[in-house]
Length: 162
Image (cartoon, rainbow, N blue to C red; front, side, top):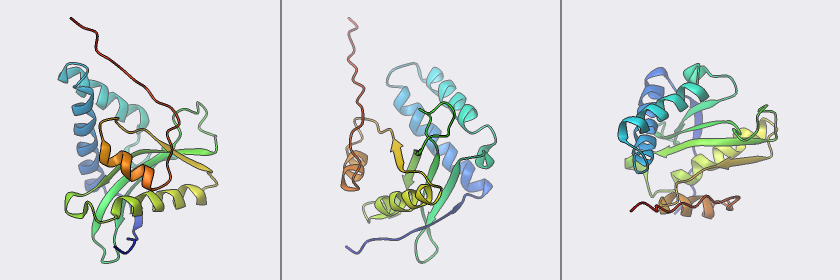
């Protein structure tokens, strides 16, 4: 398979709304495994409000869609300051979310979006791009490993309820 290429552009308001709805549903679904669904949704929405107080226009954040060579939107991403750096002035950026739209999955677009995100942060003078991935998301983990991402830390958990 030939390597795909994408161009990133800022989301339109409707694209931002759709991406936010998708991201929040996925986040609440994952959090719902560890807490009541209502609380999972509350925490998810609080996170959006905290990290994106001005929505798609939040300073320092890139909320982008990825278009292929035919101009089709194949996915989206949210790239911003590394949340582990309190002042946000570090040399690292953070990939908060990446999504390849269903009709374009398993065709190399995940790697293409990652590459475009890396180029974006490099142009800004950043020297690394970090991210979190849910441990059970084997497809995403494989994507990141194929693209040179290494495990930087690991959080493990075990239920001990009776």
